Amino acid sequence: MSMHRIGSIRLIAALALALAVLAPAAASAQELVLRMVTGFPENNVYVKHIDPWLQKFNSEGKGLLQINFIGGPRAVPTFEVGNAVKSGVVDMAMNTGAFYTNLMPEADALKLAEIPIAEQRRNGAFEYINRIWNEKARLYYLGRMVEFQPFHLYLTRKIDKPDLTGLKLRITPVYRDLFQALGATVVTTPPGEVYTALERGVVDGYGWPIGGIFDLNWQQLTRYRVDPGFYDAEVSFIVNLDTWKKLAPKQREFLERQMLALEAQNLRWKKFAEEEAERQAQAGIQVIRFDPAQAKAYRDKAYEVGWAAIIKASPEHGPRLRALLAARPGP
Ligand code: 173
Figure (tube, rainbow, N blue to C red):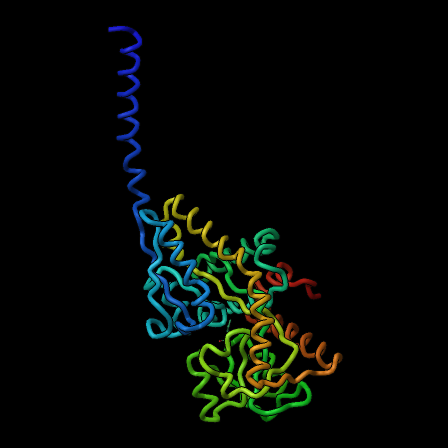
C-alpha cells in the first residue's frame, strides 16, 4: 500500500470522526416553530403587510426556523399580547408599545422617536431599548416594521382650534396625555372596539395613524381629520427572551436577517401616508387645519407631554431614551 493511499485512509477516518463530533451541533439547529400573535385586528394593514414576508420567511426557513402566525385579538386580546409573550404563552408578537404598557411604561416611548429605526440601530438606541425590554419585561426587541405614519385625531364633530374641551375620545396610551392636556375626556379601547364606540355615540372621535382607518370601516363614521399629525406609529416585533436565548446562532442570524429585510421596506409607509390622505378626502373626510402658530403649539405640546409622561413614569430610563430617540433632545 502506498504512503499516499495510507494518508487518504487516515484523512477519511479523521473526517468521519469530525462528522460524528459535529452531528449533535447540527441537530441543535433543528427546525423550530415560533408561535406568533398580534394585538392588531387580522384584516388590518400591518397584518396584510407582513403576509408575503411571512410566506417568504417560512419558505426560506424550512428546516431551520418557522413562524406560525396564530392570529389577532380573537386569540389573545390586544392589551394581553405583551403578557402572553413575556410569559411564553406565545414566542413572539407583532405589536405596538401602547398595547403593553402594563409590562413597563417605557413601551410607549417608541412612538416619540424622531429618528428612523435604521439610525436607532446605529446610535445606540436599539441596544438601549433592548436593555430595558430584556430587564423589565423579559422581551427581546427584534425590530420595527412601521414608521413614517404620524398619528392624527379623527372626529365626528368640528373644532376650530386645538381645544378638545367637551369631547370624549377613544384612546390608547399613545394619545392619552395630549388629548387630556387639551381638555378631552378619554376612553381606552382596542382597535376592534372603535367602530362600535363611534356608532353608539360613546365617543366623538379617536386617535389613529394616517393609514388604516378603512380596514374596519371607520371612514363611514368619521367626518374630520385634524392636521397636523404628531408622533410616529410604531409597530414592532417582540420575542420572548427565553425563546430568543434558546435559538441556535444560525436561527438568530436568520431571524435578524429577515427582520432587517422587512425594515428595509419601511419607506413604503411614506407613500402609503399620501395614498391614505387622498383616500380619506375621496371618502368625504374633511381636514381641520390649525393656523401655523396653533399647529406648531399642538405638535410641540404633543412631544412635551409625551416625554414628560415617560420621564415621570420612568425617571431611570426616560431621559436617556429621549436623548437617543428625539431629533433635538430636550433640556
Ligand atoms: O390603537 C391605537 O390607536 C394605537 O395605539 C396604535 C399604535 C400604533 C399603530 C396603530 C395604532
